[in-house]
Image (cartoon, rainbow, N blue to C red; front, side, top):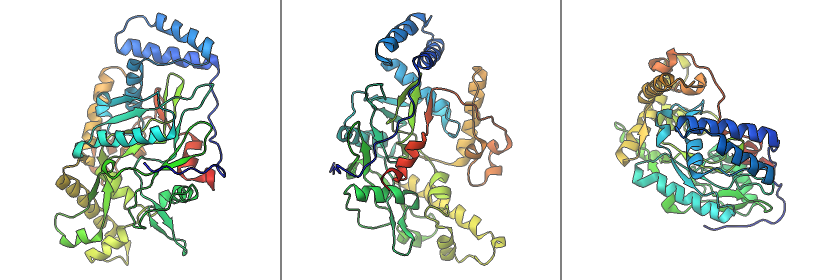
Length: 388
């Protein structure tokens, strides 16, 4: 880790309003009752009374390790936009609530990536850092994901790399990061903020970042395109909310579904926008949309992702398999009498949607807790807006 400080010019992070003691107690009681009911721990009255006394004394309460594990897993189960929730109960939880310092958060985040990667056999994992308390806010990770590629704004207004990260790239530069080699796939440093201090940047060690070079099962020239993507999609700027307690730094990951890379990250017009380039290399007629050149290029790009991850021995799933598995999850939860919230626009894959079974279902976006939540100020930090 190579931290660099900037003592001025930063804006302290804004915090979401603290819940009132009454609201906190209500949320705590609901969560503790859920935990005791599902885990068959008996009457929760005693635990609720202890939480009530702690809230009266300190303004908050501390979850037991068992409660933290349960809460993190159920938050995944409740994630309306996630198609991969069949595996929610297998989420491994690293309890690092003792960690607040930015440098220690960076080190633990690198360890998270190493543990999640396991030489390509990706493990569903969350690392939970210190929560917000009335006396002191918890740390914040500015990055949207632990691994993201820089977006360098060029003089002509274009972007080399990932345009989604242009704001955070500029913010990292203002904090003193010298930048990478200037390729389309330079790994961004982590930008981390702890209480009372300016944000700092930290380079991710090479051994914590596994990347897959993209090739194609039929086109030998594909390798020369120099495309790649990282193996672990570790969300870093969402708040884990459990029983009224906010854990603002709780990076978590499953594994990639191929379309996340091939149909969104590399294909979206506001991201890498590769479809015109791929279509040209494939010799497709791009003069009219009726040639379906976008569709054909999109399929080949997604074939490349699945083929390359398989060849590298890195866990990845495909949208057909995951759609069937989501309906398995839905059936299991319904048999247990638990509602399953889902956002149709996120559950239906961004390619060949009508060829998957989830397309032909309707879903209700039920908001349940515990939950992973995007707070507006976290989105601003990921765009680098608080240092603009």
